[in-house]
Length: 342
Image 1 (cartoon, rainbow, N blue to C red):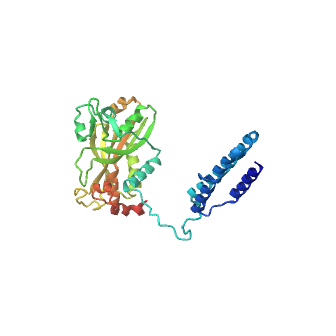
Image 2 (cartoon, rainbow, N blue to C red):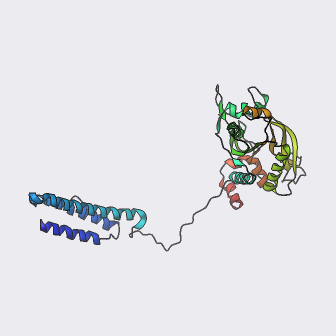
Image 3 (tube, rainbow, N blue to C red):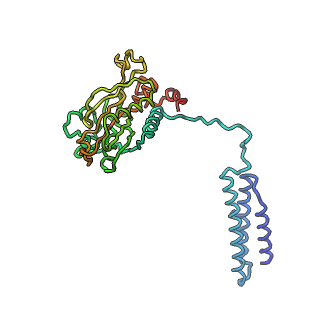
């Protein structure tokens, strides 16, 4: 037995001094020490030569040796898997392969800029689900069943009775915030919306919106106008011409649409602005008292304003894009034009 113990000690010294030069050396180590005909297996076979009163002692020495040999093999294997294999043919003096960087989609760029503008005014972001129920998408916004204004939005219904649908506007996220009862409210709700429309250069079955809502005591139409004036100046430039036109929305009263001077023709009239010199960018108004009441807010104490805009329309105006379909076709030639706009 003493001779076997000395032999094991010598093997340990050999293993401790061993460093594989590559995968081939490591495999040779495995075969020599841990293989079916390896040293560890052979030493276990010598157990029958050890006296019975010392078998336990020798067995402990042998198990320690086996664990030591296996641990060293696992250590070398981990180093190889982590790229420390010195037998690799990688020339680290060569220049790295070029990594082509992408860019943000123009819709994402404009969305982020809109968010930054309103964040500086104290607005926070509120998001909601894209699949909505009838209450949050229509009824709470003063659009009860059979209301004619529902015909203004061709809807993708998922189920009927109860009605579930792909939201037609991000106002549904505003309803959820109003229902929480935490006042005052100053939020914008960006997101994707869906309408059953024929796809063309000016319309799509899905698009992106940013809607805003401010509710507090003594909020007036003047607050709305100054907020939107600031937004247009920041988004399009200090000298951008602006006008408000009376309009109708069931969830605001009074209501207005906001136009800016057409960038294409400079206000002289062209096909883009339908020869009016103006382009509509958003709708807005004072929150209807019925909407406040539907959401549990006292319309006698609180007032507010709301606005909504399509991000695609803002993007088309900002970058003079004439076809809405380009945003969703994923044509790399189109997207590469915006690498320098971030």
